[in-house]
Length: 199
Image (cartoon, rainbow, N blue to C red; front, side, top):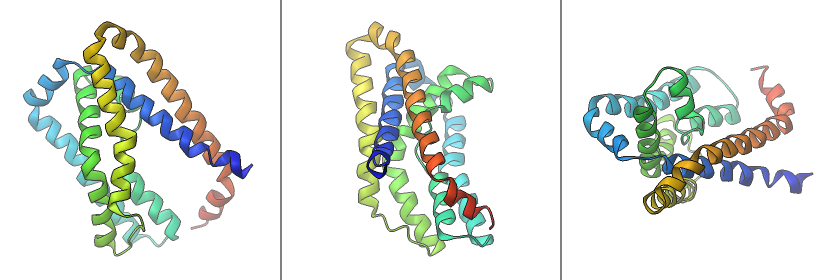
């Protein structure tokens, strides 16, 4: 059982990497033009993701007494890398496709450098270091974001029509993989989650 559970994080990472690869397949010149044309909107969006959300998370964990595991989870989630469902949720909320794609790809690129820095800075500010060196976090982010992103962009450049055709099926597959992995992780963590509910 424990041996099988050790593969679940790997499956989750594969799902995230596949989602990034799939979104890179849909990247276009319009997405780049949107970033340049709507610099203020993109700037505010990135500030809300990389500054405002982590600041609120740190304020919450400093204000509310909670177990270290809950503290770690809340702050870590506040600067975690992009969820595979981000563009779909933006579309459902009435957002423009260029904005959703441009924001997703921008966050994926910036996260390579920003997430390790945020993890280190958050630990220093809250005086609760997270025990993971920034270099190790950076290596993970590069593996899970940078490599799939670059491969997707290269595939898009080389096989344009094929890339667009397979992007949607790959995105659905990535969503299915990540959903299954998360459900398994939550189900096996229910006892620990139940213990934390009392706080």
